[in-house]
Image 1 (cartoon, rainbow, N blue to C red):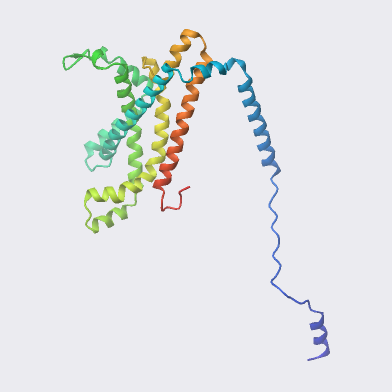
Image 2 (image 1 turned 120 degrees about the vertical axis):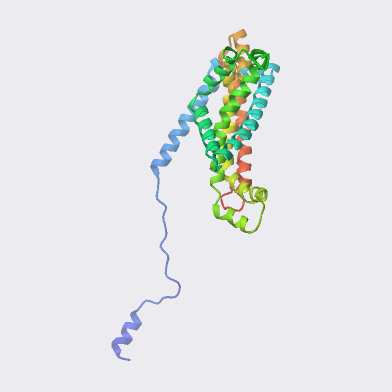
Length: 285
């Protein structure tokens, strides 16, 4: 080895460990933190305004929050929501089956139903059913006004309306299932019922549950519209009280708080149902 080579080797830096990894410094997002601080300040000011505003009369809200008439209206709202959702999804599932049928008549009937009831506002539908006696004074020898009271009109109108949306929710859920899995189940000799119960339905529910949960919450809030036909639901109960006491804002706040409580509970339930059906997909949270 020459003297020049020995000199270069003696001056070369010694590497005693792995190469140093450059330190990653996160980007400072001053704009986002500033925006967050502004939003928090505005939110605090809004909450302070609501709490300190004497016009809300929070003492009156607390007084009427659990009164018998309000709780009876709340119970009717919950009962009406449950009945409408069960009947609406039962009819909607039948309509979805018609829409997916190979029979062109059934497909046309289902498509026409969905188009019609999604085109007419729910308030107009309720008013039409409430005044159906003007078109058909008697049905099977019974006066229509005796056959369809306000609660029956609310159930019929809301159910027919919800069924149109439920049909599309169920149809979309079924179409989301991979066709190859159904064909594989057929090749294994599974019966039609077992294919639906073990293959189609569990996978379809992953797509059905989120919009169905939103429909449930929407139906709960939508029942407030039946107050226009004198159904004694939560909102109508609050209206009856403030028509007598003239305490409009606090009674509306009573109804608002009850709707917020119930929708929050339903939202929590929807989260866990979605989590249950998302098992094994890596999307459960």
